[in-house]
Image: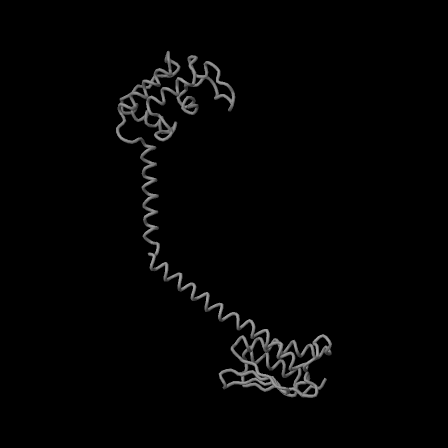
Amino acid sequence: MWAIAQRFLLSDGSAPRPGAQLRPGVLRGGRHIGNLAQILERNRITPRRYTPQSLADAIQRLIDAGKLRSPRYEELRDPLAHFAWTLRRLNDLTEGETTLERIRREDLERAEKRRQRLLQELPNPEEQAAAHEAAQAFFASTRRLRKPIARERRTDVVELVTTILGRGNRLYDAPATTQELVGDLTTMHKQLTADGWQLTTSDAALTWTREREQAVEVTLRPPLPHTVIAVTSQLAPGTPLAAAVYLVHERYSTRDN
C-alpha cells in the first residue's frame, strides 16, 4: 500500500516508521491509508496480480492506447478518487491474467517441466536395485582385497627385519650400520612387493620372486645376520627396481661389519 501510494503520488510525505501510530492525513487530501486499502481490495490489486511497477505499466498501456486520460495529479481535486476510478477502468479493460500472473505461471510451468525431465532421467526401481547391488559387491570385494594386503605387509616387514637381525635382537640395540641396512632393505622390499614380488626368508637369505621366473636374492652371513655376502638379481637394468637393488649391492655386498 505504501509503495503504491508513493508511486502514484497519493501519499502526504514519507511512510510512517514501523510500529508508529498512523496519523490522520497520511494521504493527500487528508485521507487515511485505510481508504487506499479498501480501494485496492475492491479492485483486486494484490501482490499476486501486480507489483507497483507492473500496475503503473498496465495503466500506461491504456493511456497510450487512448483508453484512459492522464491528468496532472496536482490539478486533481481528489487524487484518491481519480485513482479509484482508474483502477475500475483497468479492471473493465483488462482481460485474462495480468503480466505478473503470466510471468509466475510460466515460471511454474518451466519448473514443472524441469521436474518431469529429472524424473524421467532417474533410473527405474530395477535399475536402482541393480546399481545398489553392484555398489555393494564392489565395496565388499575392495574390503576383501584390502584387509589381507594390509596384514601381509605388516607381517612380512617384521619377518624381513627379524631375519636380518636374528631372532631376539632389537633394532634400536643394533649398530648404526645395521640400522642403515635394515632401512635400505625395507625400502627395497616395499618397492618390490608393490610391484607384485613375494618374499621368502631363511636363516641365510632373503629371496623375492615373481611369477616363478624372476628372483632377487640377498645372501646373509649366518653368524652375523646383518652382514650381506651378495646381492643377485634378474631384473632388467635401468628400471627403478633394478636401481634399488643395485644400491643395496653397492653399499653392503661383501662388506663385513
